Amino acid sequence: MYQCPTCHESTISGWQKWGAHTTHPARCSSCSSLSFVPTVTSSGILSASVALIAFVGIFIGVPLHSPTPVLLAIIGALFFYIWRWHVAVLLPTNSELVASARRSNRLLNLLVLLGILAE
Ligand SMILES: [Zn+2]
Image (tube, rainbow, N blue to C red; front, side, top):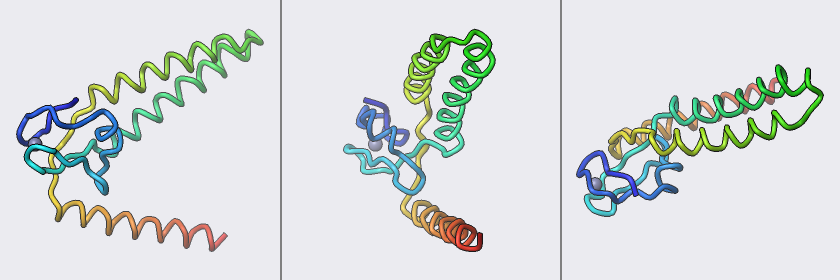
């Protein structure tokens, strides 16, 4: 369990933390406050994990003609991913900020959809 950034009780489960986004924050079962992991952190964790696998595959696996470096990189990336989520900081938020983030997210999704349809 992870500490709520507001009341500092250990009430946030690992699954709640992993899914705590600005648009869908985790709710503390003790004080009912909302918290999230910043998008830059969650995106960075995934990007760094994928980059590790890709770089090892391209620069080590391909020259050696062996899948072993990539398999080791996948295992390393998995440990990195879990460790970074474990140490990621939860930030407090409130219902107004969540509503604002959801509006922004809907607008972004609409713009992406329009971009796809314009192709
Ligand atoms: Zn709390």
